[in-house]
Image (cartoon, rainbow, N blue to C red; front, side, top):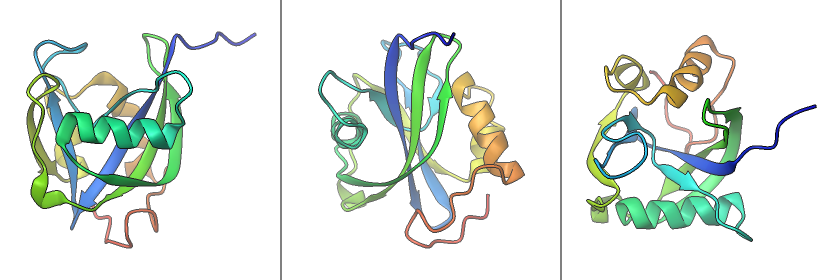
Length: 147
């Protein structure tokens, strides 16, 4: 019998060229100052796509369009994560919300994977992308996905 997750959350993969948008979580949120992809909890009566759009506006003032769910995982703290590729319409207006985001960077996947403060829930995802078990091809605007 499987255990029902305590929460459901969405993660967004937004790419510019060969770089992905990554954030450092603020000091006041769960897993403070860890690096990861933007995202957050799905609220009651909200679809994954709606949650992803809302979270990107709240965290980064960024309007995104979810493209495709590429993976689902369960964290050690029993949160079900849904990993989505997404495109962004207004990268020039990106402004992190300091209540949720301490810093942000555009990184290659390998740079994020090697970061000493990488959020644990991102490790397996990045390993699976690197091994080819998760494909991001064709879901991020057709960019070259060299990591």
